[in-house]
Length: 150
Picture 1 (tube, rainbow, N blue to C red):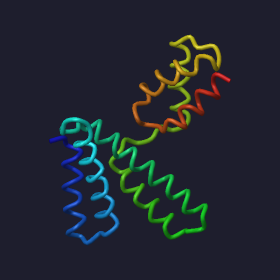
Picture 2 (picture 1 turned 90 degrees about the vertical axis):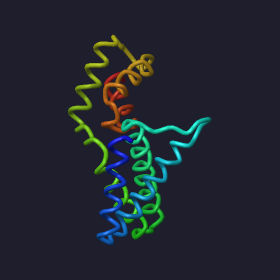
Picture 3 (picture 1 turned 120 degrees about the horizontal axis):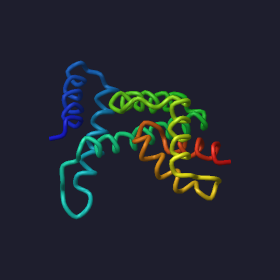
C-alpha cells in the first residue's frame, strides 16, 4: 500500500483519538476521495503516491474554491471551515513554489522550447506543467506563461 495513503490512515486514527473533529472529518473526506478514485473505471486498483497526491490536490482546490464562494456570499463561518480543511490537506502536499522560482522555471521552459509568442502557449504550458510537477496550481503557471510570452 502506498505510503501517503497509510500516512493518511494513521493520522486519521490519531485525530480520532485526540477528538480533533476538523482533522478527523477532513481526513475521512480525503480517504473517501482516494477510495472512490481507486474503484473508478473498469477495474479497481491501488493508487500510487503520486496519484493519491493528485487526489489531495484536487480536494484542496475544491476547499479553496468553496471558501471563496462562501466568503463572497457573506458566510464567513463556512468559509473559515473550508479554509481550515484546505490547510489540513495542504500539509500532505509538497510546498508550493514561490513566484520567483515559478518565473525561473517558466523562463527556462520558454528558452528550451524556443517559444516566441502566444501561439506557442500550449507547447510551453505542457512542458512547464511537467517541470512544475504539482508544486504550483495550473492557473498560476498559465498566468506566468502568459506574462512571459505576452
